[in-house]
Length: 329
Image (cartoon, rainbow, N blue to C red; front, side, top):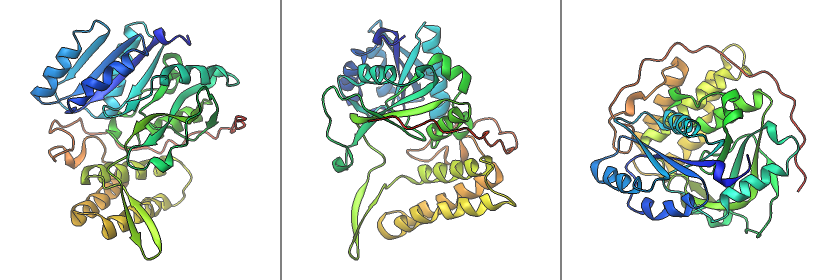
C-alpha cells in the first residue's frame, strides 16, 4: 500500500501553460500512473495534453466545460480507483514538485500511530513569492505535525479512507474545497497531517508586499471571482459548523470579509470589482446559492456552463471529535 507504484498522480488543468509539460515528468517518475482532468481548456492546451497522453502511464479526461476544481478532483480520483490504484496524490497545474515528494509522504505515513486513520498527508511547501515562509529542507527529515487542514496540491489520500469521508463538495466549485474536506474527515475520526519539510514550490495568488506606517503587509491579489468563492464558501462553512446561534454565523461571515476587504481597499487594483465580489460572495453564502455562481463568464473564472441549481442548505455541523495528540517532532 505504501509503494509509489500504487500511487496515482491526479492533476486538474484549466488552460495550462506550456511549462506544465516540462514539469510533468518530474512527478510521473515518482508514481505508478497519472490522470489529468481538464476543465474545458482551449485548443492549444488540449493539443499539449494529447501529446502528453501518448505516454501509456498518462490518462487525460476532457470535460467539455469547467465543472470546478472539486468535481474534477472527484472524477480524477474515481478514474484512478478504476485503474486499480490504492492511493492518489493531488496537484495543481502550476506546482513545482521535489524529486522525493511522493516517497516522503508515504514514509511519513508509516511513522504515524494508527496510519489507517490518516485521511490526508499534506506536503509542506515553499511559497514562490514568499520564500521566507518555507523552512529549510533537511534531507531525510520525516517529521510531521497534525493540522486542521492541508491544501489540495501535494496532498496524499488513500482510496479506502476517501470512500469513508466522501467526495469533494462539487457545489463549492473551487475555494475551501480542501478545508471543508478535511473538516469532514476529522469529524469522522480521521486525522490530517503535514510534513514539516517543504516538498514543493507553490503559489497562493500573486502576493505583493506593502508598507503601512511602520508595518509590512502582504496581500494575495486574487481575482474578483476567487474573492467571491472564498467569501461564499467560508460563510456556508460557518453556517454548517453548528457553532453559532440565532443566525450569528451571518455576522461571522461578514466579519471574515473585513481583513481581505481592508487589504483590497489599501493595496490592490480593481478595488470596486473585488469588494463587490467579496460582499456578493458573502450574501450568496447567506442565501445558500452555491454551484458555479455569477462568475461563470468572467475572464480567469469558470466557463459559462451552468451547474444544476443547488438544493436548499441545511445545517450539518460535524459531530464533536476528540483531538488526537500532536505527533512528536
